[in-house]
Length: 381
Image 1: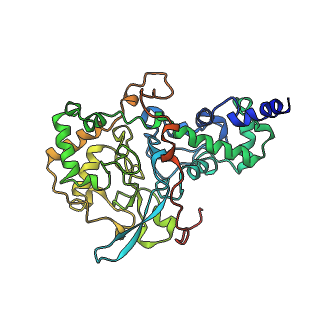
Image 2: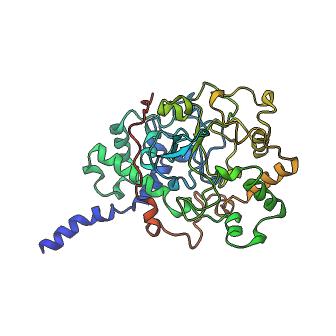
Image 3: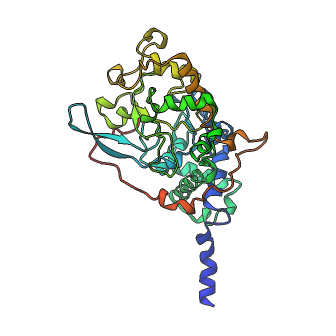
């Protein structure tokens, strides 16, 4: 009898309450009552129909008149970005240097996804909560709180930690990583999946355009290509507003000023405007920028931190108009069908059959390398 009573007592903790962790994360993601003032949720800036990105250049916050300074990136495949680490490489003189790879936010200030999901709740230009006590109070009053075992008995810290973990569980769900774009069919052996223009574009992507040097087309941290090396670079994009130091503002290293994360190109055709500050509006303009940035400086205007701009891999590619057209055409082949097939009124895209569950891919989600704490990291403002 004692064993049965003990088991009954433990069931809510074993199950995580009536809601699974991923379902709890989904409810939190949509909950507009968690901002101060109420009215903004995660989905306000990461819209499912546009690959969980924001079509506005920068997103308005919960407080009227406040806006972010960066374009909200897509959350598709975000859970597959590896934790931050230092990768050793060699400079042009053959000397070893260390570059940052992985991590979350466009400036790499979060080591992993668990660190990332916390910040928007407390950013004054986003959800604007004062502290975890305020957030925990709102969570206890949420409509789904009664379906979460132990919320009322937990400390504020445990309530918020559970919710952070739930958001991570939600972002790891198969709906965020379907890998069902036409490019996946092509790589699986179906040559008819791409048009002639798209196949030409893929050739330019991997050769003359050198796009694949950063937007990798091979398997790396995941079984399928993520179309990103998870690194950081200063592309010299047009400046908007105050100077933004990017990665250099986090590390305090002058050589990394103006560097931002290399995004995945999956679903890129749905996520305009482009670059970290949303300064370029169309994919055609993006390709023209890469091709002639250094030949047409008056067109693009000033850039932040010109001293760290990558002038070796882009800026004067010598691409023809046809090659640019073909590259633009290729970008549509990176769009997941599950997003294209969303029907009016659907909150989220459907998960395609056969996409592995989180449990089946558990090994990929285990914590890997820890950050190198010897590197200087400036405190947040």
